[in-house]
Image (cartoon, rainbow, N blue to C red; front, side):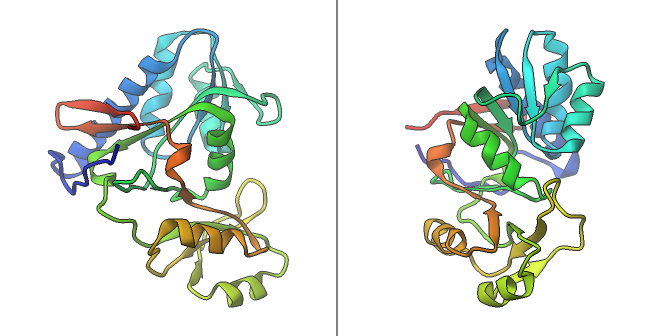
Length: 227
């Protein structure tokens, strides 16, 4: 099923968007059951997910995609394990920077897209939670990248349309950058980036990885399943 693009969808300013994020997060936690292993994303929408999960008081184990999420989850009493302890997840819940009608995602505004992609791929069900302004007619730049520090000048030269971010390295030592040109066909760009040896990961997530999208809207949230 294609997602209808929107630019406002009832959100009125920052307060409206924050309320939509909260509503999306609170609907997502209803999918979490006792005994589940849960992947936790990174970002402003996940900030609403963590306390909602903690209030459930269910027996779950979690893997976080960033040290910040791990620390925040543990502070709320969630059982957060390291990424090396669980080889399979029942569900992963994360936000997105952009969601296209075809369900392509752009993720990585916080620079955690490599771990986010690993966690999403490890989960039986990957649920994306967004405010309505994240639904777009087509993906636009920037597309986050994580690059190897080794041979970085050559990688940047071969990529061309790339800008380094003035931010710390990723938790795994990668250099955070952005693809700045028009993404065009996301599948074609994803293939191009994956062919570059210096690219650790990119922030394009394909539709086949996405199980459900939960969109917060003014006064409620909607779960949109594929097909």
